[in-house]
Length: 421
Image (cartoon, rainbow, N blue to C red; front, side):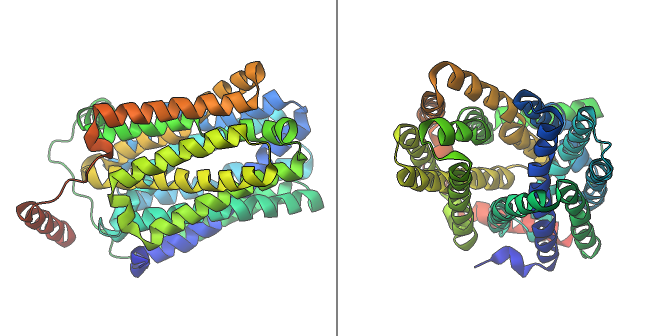
């Protein structure tokens, strides 16, 4: 049932990503903690997170052009190697006591700049390793790695920070990328990139992904849905501490349990799609996941019982990853090979790039009206947009289109030609 793991190249990639993603999560704890130690300012800590994600918001289309223009393995070798440098510099500076806040900002910007090239290449590399048949399974397994590492990485980082301080977290992240680089070097028999005879200028390529998404309604509307959820319903870093401290009164330990409950649900959702990938082929299930996600967030906003809040967040995490992984799979399956990197760059912008704006929205509403209202208003906006998409564009979340025998034969012939190429 774990079809993607039948492919040797993906097995190598999978192991490398497990190690490097744990390191990434360790640094995601260590970097804001170092900023807090240096400044004792929550605002300046938030600026570090904004600095890391701003390049993804502004420049991912350039990363998508690179992913579509060049073979993806060399691009990934370059990005995974480059990720080592900011982490190692932060290790050296923090270990020697020479770290200053502006250095953390520079490291965050450098990491974000590398990320804007890494995400489109890494996401669109899946189909080259496993083919479209096992693509959904590969995406679900990647989500499982991400969410599993989200539990392990911060826990290990917390222990290290408490025992010896932040420097070893940066060193661990830097070293972890060696596993990803080795995995890429060991891969064999990857498909050759088919170059277009008359490739357009770089400026034109920057707009081709957006033009395709605009004219392909399913892709365009799915990107809109992801962006709206990211803006209004995925602001846990901003809202959850407020719930833990001001609403549920459970303190830092309860805050960790709230995040853990949502992470557990996300992991279960990813594993469900990994074992039953055909679930991602049903747009109606995706709509149900969106509806339950919104309902769970609304329930969480009114809950004052800690155990009920934990259970509700677990459901929300399950539906969130189910919705997002299905969106990723559907977009990559629909999008032509020569545009996949640029369209995935749009997905990265919709999912991660707008995150800082969403945090500002959530923080502002929470300051004015309180955390429960911030959660409820954001979830309601996301639900209203999904309902509007369903009414205006029924094909996005409606009955899956059946493939005729003629189309199936043509698709099979195309796949065979691509495999031979």
